[in-house]
Image 1 (cartoon, rainbow, N blue to C red):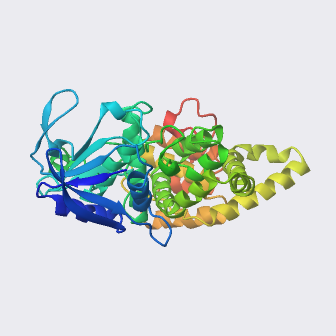
Image 2 (cartoon, one colour):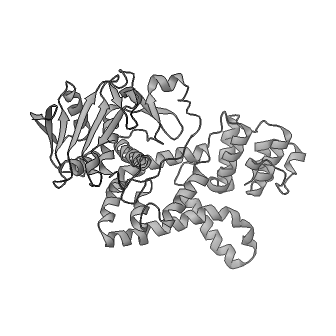
Image 3 (cartoon, rainbow, N blue to C red):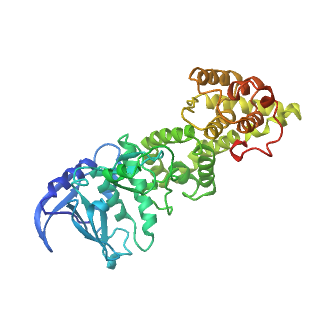
Length: 434
């Protein structure tokens, strides 16, 4: 597929950004074109493992003929751009854009004009948001790879919203390779505007991570690439269950969000090449599912369900033996991940969620609970300060997840009347229910 950079005085900056994405590019020209001159871009395969930038370059530049041409142009922040609905805006309100040729809307790779701001909002920079809604940099090469990713998706097969989310997935894979913070959602803008509007609070996650759309997303870059490759796609029952566990168990707490962010960044350092291999090898896909994915899915199910069946351990010796083994395995598994929690500055309601999560899923032995409660006490984060009703509710919720009298006294205080209120949570605040 012919790939060109427009000659308008900014071609040097565009070439610099393209080389930052992938160094195996060559430039020739300028050559005449409709409306001016362009520089032709060529791709050369590297000897090592393909990076996200190389895979994108290979797909867009070395695709079979007939896929259409792509033109990239670097523009300035105040350049006026006419949107699809006819409105005219400054480029700095968009950061980048792509225009498709309607006559090639059904092509896999589309005739496209990709434009982006080479002045980075008049040198003030652009930002997008991470999982904690903190501002993270949206630099020129990130804008460019994001806009180029749109050229992979035919307009006839994808809505604008779906293409935008898929482009975020490609951008995040590129970010992960460079150990950059991962982006959540599609919002963003000039840093000065975001800071003026107090949008860089970083206090809570405002929206869940975007999901990849249709199953033919770019090189499988969705949130569960290996599970997707082995179970039939990003919307299989197994992947949906992983998302459910992520959204309902992990992302509801500060610890869970931090754990997911750290895990996800490491995961994307190795997962995409594996998923790409699985997508093209039935035997490898079946082996990976049998040896890794299915056991892991079952282990997650046990990890979530085990805390709620402790009472059943009394029913039979066989249950005691088998479930005790499960408990041992889960405790060994949990021991491999950090289990410290941080409730500094949290309200009683937020602290309650965090502590119940820790008691159910992280602190699975009395020794581990004692260690962490001692640390929280040393930091003066417990006992919690709140009204009597809230402390009663928290005490009942902690009792329901197996916290001992002594453990609860360290968290809610030593008021005997509060500590004795361990009956049903029917009257508790909703957040205090396990």
